[in-house]
Image (cartoon, rainbow, N blue to C red; front, top):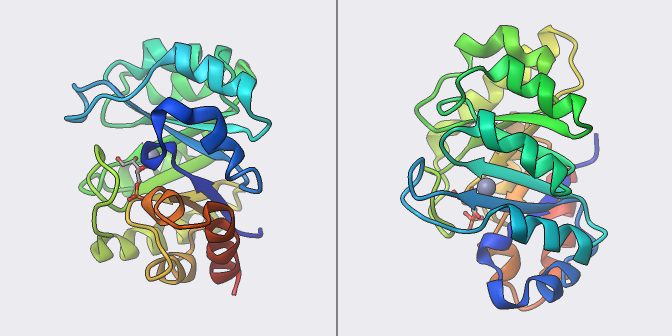
Length: 217
Ligand code: DX5
Ligand code: ZN
């Protein structure tokens, strides 16, 4: 699959979200970081803003829920207009039931792992998912340094996906930039979240194209 680049609006200007979405109209998805100040020590946005953003852009929304009780909230993000919803396995009470519910509501179901969460205990869950997100920083903030120590986990996850013959996308999030994206792609990632590397660039649309070209090289 060709590499997909998902700019994270966490690094955008929250007072101008529609314009900031438009600035990366060539991106595959728009990554929306939902934080509740409980699962992570930061607070961002919720269902009403996702609803407005879904109306304001044609780019599909990839909602990354860094929140407690995703079992209760994730379905509401599908209703709000998200085309992909990622919950953290560390927070989910019933990840299989939740993934099935997200799919039944018509969105892609995705599960995220924090850096210290191994993939191996979840091997049997992979067929229930459309995407797996491997965090390459501790979730909570943009602009952190990429954790190289996550590369072996990306590699092992890619092997598991191959072993089971799955179509699952493998997303990386955190510190992805021109200097780290090639390592992620080489390890087997195919969906790349980039916040500061896109919105911190002088030309965000060009940054998306350049990252995609690097990942596909
Ligand atoms: C961090 C968020 C990321 C964040 C990435 O917890 O999940 O999506 O926006 O930002 P950068 O690309 O700047 O590391
Ligand atoms: Zn994210």
